[in-house]
Length: 219
Image 1 (tube, rainbow, N blue to C red):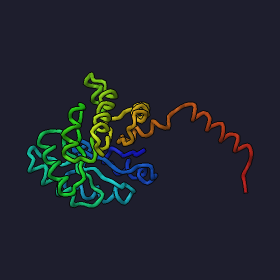
Image 2: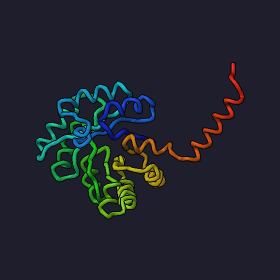
Image 3: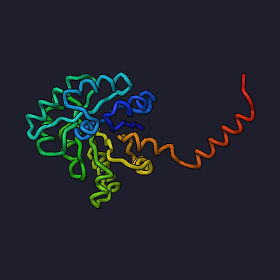
Image 4: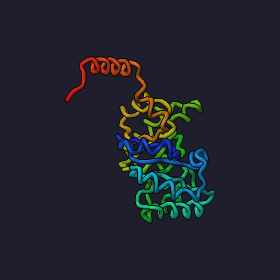
């Protein structure tokens, strides 16, 4: 099981990364903007995330043409060995992904909403594919069923590409996808904390602590 933090907030990310429970950090232009960061501050983000324990940092290339996406992708790749370049699931993005992957750049194809989008990404040599579960559901689609179909396409095609599911809002969504064989998830800190919000667990822990206090100090 591989969890990634979907945030660019240093204050939120560092304590969680230091827990050792996260494989890395994922970002996109909207996440960077939400954290008040500029593109020129990406190297700083990569540095502090790595120092806090992010084994992999995902940064999205930007631009409307293949050439722009390749150029920014090469720059992101140059920032360190732990970088994965994100490109959108567009014709230009997938073409850039193919060229970048041929140069040894690790690639994630993002903003995926349909199973057919997995096929060009597989052909491009992408290492990861990021379907947006919550946004699929918001659009009236059955996001879980679509992601299951994407996973089937990858398995049937014999591709090593991994799903890294994004736009997750509930812990139950993650467990449902894990039952389908999905093992890579990126989630905001608020979603991560929902793994630990069961009131029955909280009540049990309170009883344990009360009993421990009655038993006195050890040692």
